[in-house]
Length: 438
Ligand SMILES: [Ca+2]
Image (cartoon, helix red, strand yellow):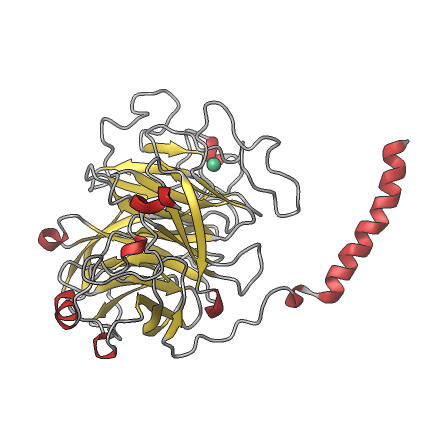
């Protein structure tokens, strides 16, 4: 009776609320997203002197990922299915030929790019993408080709995962570990697939560089498990990197409304989705009563609300001494509000416990899809927009004549920099050595 009565009261209330929502419309949600100006922009930051953000190049359609080339320049993927080259700050108008055909519905398309550790010798390039597999469905896949004279040759699929109806969880990242193995993430926002040991979805896979399964994978020989699986229980992984200082694999994944998380991957680890999460479902209820569970790995970092984390880098360069060891994560939007994308900087102590977070570049209102440290020690970002841009973060004190992409040596020749060459005003706080003093 009681239930019936509340249903009678709540029902009309819910309808009224829904009607109000419709009356205002989805357009009322979000900040106006002005197009990115020409820049450059300078910003104050909490621990590093003023920084300057410059547009390196633009006219990229929903760029997704960056891979720096040993001979200079970089590869940039565009989600609609193009692989581009940027050299000396100039976008080659001709895309690289020979990329796989992609399915672009939802968030699918061409996604990550990684080069082989011995790329200079073998020219091998790895791409994650959404493969059209018939019946209108798409499957996260990994392909490998050889980059020769502006084209990919010998292209073949190393992994094609399971396809589901709809557009959920089509993402995939790819990275090489310190063991020389290939790690590929697969979107897991598809029912219970992330916990299904016979499904390749919602996993991080560990492979040899030719796509075969290493015999020392954690589930090799175990009945009912796919031998490619390295870790399981992942929702949508949009960040997967080799931590340059610890040699660990760091991963981040998007929760629903809240519950984005950074994880350090251990072989055979179960990271919980969809059994446990700190987040809430889009409609409001918690995903799980308890956010952790015995036998499942707990995240290192959690976001509530979600920031739609995308891209990740650990800063190790000389350009921003106060940022060494900090982790940078892009945000597509925060709290499900469009126009709130930005960049986050996370500081850890020696025990790899989080101690500070700063959000940056909010003023630009761009969806930040990718963040990487360049060989020149600057940070490079991609904005996930129709007219997407490649941005570079550099110290604002960099002489203006040296703002264009140049070998680091020539910049250093003009103005010596680094922790010893350049005094840091206002109490030089920052990296791990001085945190205890604060
Ligand atoms: Ca988790």
